[in-house]
Length: 366
Image 1 (cartoon, rainbow, N blue to C red):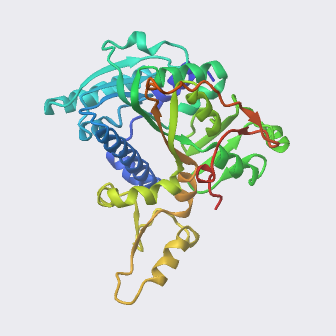
Image 2: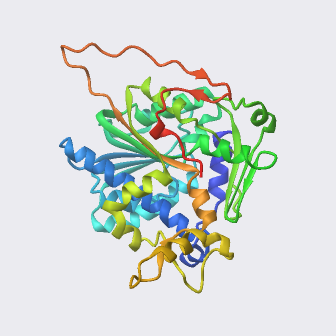
């Protein structure tokens, strides 16, 4: 799958109107995804503020149509570089920005670039290093082969200042492999998503490759272009070679409770959960809301008999993703020796990459 094919796919995706989004079967899931991104950015901003970083210089890598422009305005960014392989998406991002610019928001540069091949730094006008790099739901496309992944990651963090952060969201390779192995003929499907792993023999033999492990992920009947597994231990290893250190990696199911304390009010405002019960539920079967029914049954007398929830199918789909945060290492002080040892990637018996992934980093299989 070439970058040109990815660009062509996203250039042909029509921009949904407000009513279309409201009528979508995954309306609440999309809102939840947006809320998670908002919390991820807010968490990064707080971490940088603790290090006395002022207004942020940001790289929004694989920015798409500019869906996070408003988030950068809320975060008080000073300048944002928006880069994407799809030229139509960049034009739509520019249009969004021009509509916001009257509010005296941050300065911005928009770049059409194939970040799996091009040297992004050469395209960036202002060579000042970045405080924060964000890549949402896109990095795994670069794992079609090793050179593409390495080039993409170098573009991601090459201009990041020491102490700067790289945050993002990513399909959880472990969870996806688990789901399709427990499905039929390399497939997992529910009411809102369908995942197909292309090489069934690789699954049977437990030999999913480090690069080029192709799968198809469709949401709400919208067929996406082929994607590639990015095994997180491998991502971690490659970024450590670029002087990055892991701060956290969490499946969405783990991240949501952590983000709730600071972000509960925003989640309500963004309609990230569906009220249950109500007359117009997005899921059409009782099985979609068994957890919500159980929760209501456990409520004490006198408490309101409703809860915020996601349908079972939306929850299963959202658990296919993870959030991550890395930090650029600070230069060693004079009395410290620079770290030179590189972690070796080995193969586990099932073929997936083995690196230092702790119990907290492993996905829960529910």
